[in-house]
Length: 98
Image 1 (cartoon, rainbow, N blue to C red):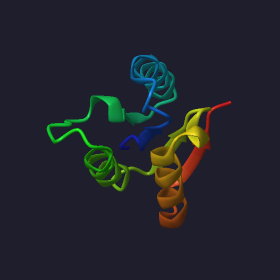
Image 2 (image 1 turned 90 degrees about the vertical axis):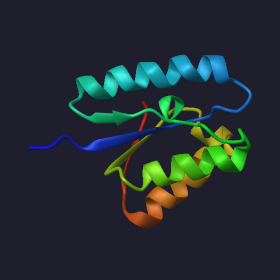
Image 3 (image 1 turned 180 degrees about the vertical axis):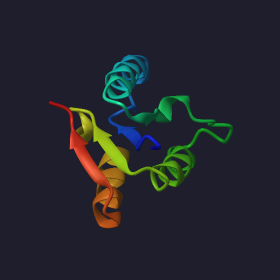
Image 4 (image 1 turned 60 degrees about the vertical axis):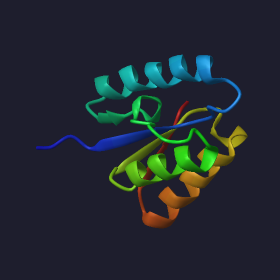
């Protein structure tokens, strides 16, 4: 049986260094739970580095996942709130970090 793909979602802008470790820790946790993880911090971001370019890559990737994992700080991020809304509308399972 193929593992479910889970997209990790949380605040990045303004806390890039800390976000990298938060996303990495979530990735380890989710892999231990048996998921195939998608860490947006490790996606190929070979573009103009604008917010909208990051979001285009991330949203395309999110749409290929069965689950989204919301880090505790997700409500503080415009991009994470958008990803949450899209996941909700598309019926992607949502898991919230405890």
